Amino acid sequence: MKRAEHPFQFVAVSYLTRIGNQVATTLAELRDGLEKCSDASIFYHTFQSLGRHHFLTEGFSNDFAQWALAALNRAELAERMAALDIRSYTELSDLRSDLLRITDEFCAAYPQELDRKAFEPFYFCESIEVTVPKGSEAWTLEEFRRGLEHLGHGSFNYHLLMSRLRLQLRTNDFSEWFAKELKLESLARRTDNIDIYTHTLDSARSNLLQFIDKEMAA
Amino acid sequence: MTTETKAESPTIQLDDYVPLLGQAEVEEIRTLASKLTGRTVQMVNSTAMGGGVAEILNRLIPLMKELELDIRWDVITGGDAFFEITKAFHNALHGGPYQARQEDFDLFLATNEQNRQRMEFGCEFTVIHDPQPIALIEARHGREGHWIWRCHIDLSHPNQDVWGFLRPFVFRYDGALFSSPSFARQLPIPQYLAYPSIDPLSDKNKELDADYVSSVLERFKIDASRPILTQISRFDRLKDPAGVVRAYQIVKRYADCQLVLAGGGAADDPEGGVVLEEVRKIAGNDPDIHILDLPPWSALEINALQRASTIIIQKSLREGFGLTVTEALWKKKPTVASAVGGIPAQVIHKHTGLLAHSVEGTAYQIRFLLSNPALAQKLGEQGHEHVREHFLITSNVKRYLTLFLHSAGIS
Image (cartoon, rainbow over all chains, first blue to last red; front, side, top):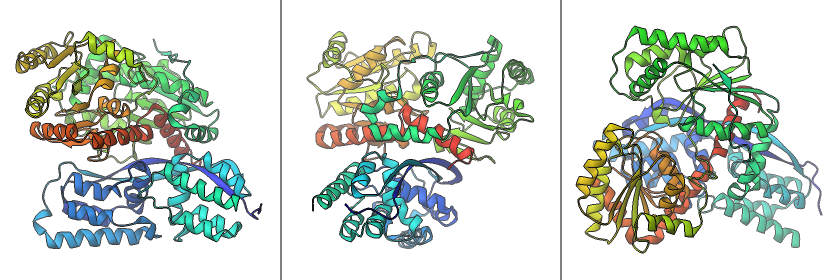
């Protein structure tokens, strides 16, 4: 079995949520918040929100879309916001721009909606990420498989999804290691193609384990 | 006299949660804690027994000790007058009326000062729970360490006199923890989200034998063969039991079902007794409405009623976090609840339950779920996962560990 030059380091991750001082009770205020909130807030309500709600596989994408649906009852806006695929972004500023663009287009088409009071306010929050090395590392695919089974949801998500922002690449920690260290490009590609919007983290992990098993059996 | 409190339930260990969370999640809690071995933590609140805070600390402290944090729990003491004042503060911070008196503030400060002199401080992390011991921040003078104020109450519409008195103390902490973003205020110190939690191994939430559940239904003469709609709550106008009956009466035109309103508090709360009588009057002589005034030691019965229910309702007009909703979701129950207080954090509309804003809306959502059992089941299952991820005692442990790691700059 091929041995990597550099091992895969598994990390335990946990998030603290910081409550911001911005609150939106109308669409106009949400738009204002989207423009002014921190990158950590955009991250919390998009990337991290998907991780927090990983067990939802239908129709949940990000907090902004969910609020547009549940609190503003504006399905069109919600659908358009939900359609943003966070895997397409390696910069939070780009994601913020697209959220603003969609909101502005909706506001231009339905100016009467701007000041309609929402059923409940939107509270802007931020993520604070804390990571601790698990002390386990993998030099081979077999060792990687063992480590993968011992990852909690948050940590699995950290390596599979959050890593895109860290790497500034349209890939993830796992695929990066498979391709660079083990020269397993096909496994890397299949891992990167796992649809996190239609999978729970558990089913995404099961898929990845199956890919690895096939690779090891080959 | 202030004493260090011995936490109860020492027999429950972290590994007991493995069947519910999975080995990997429990391992990661241990990994996070490994960086805090031997670090000192002090929790301070105002009661060792009774109330949600004590209930949480009774389970949290042994788990933290098992994780090798050097944690202690202290309870402040005070006379009846002090606790009458803090009760009045509590109600005033929830927005209730309060006539501020200087002597109340003086006694509050004097009692905090007495406790400060009796207690030992100096831990790396000090967590002060709720307003009663808030002025213990005076003990920080000249000491290092991180001081956190854990506010378990809704501060969104406080009485300005009481808040104005407490606010300068809050500002001296390094951070504050709130149960929901909606409970927080604009503060110059960092505010963090810390959901309350339930213990899945407690009598109120543990798995029950089907025979026991059946026996409880029999005892209360509830028909297990027809749909059961249930609201568990005190007989309190803010829980809108009358609205629940009206919603049920609308549903009843379309579906043969029963309503269970179960709770306590009527015996020792004069207003609870009045509300109970009002509800009985609205219910009339409908044999399918079961109004159960239960004693405080009815955790197993409440658990059984929740598990036997087809749909759980929480039609509150105002709410704290709404742990009865958490309990229902944990039991995989389709839930229809008002979008107030901490409920929207738990009931994600159309994902983990359904939100409603009126009697008619509540009735409609109930009818919808009764007509779509497969969807109802899915909402219940997703609600269970939501609780598992965010609202269990183990999540609470993890959140404190994360806060301590962040505060100490370990990451």
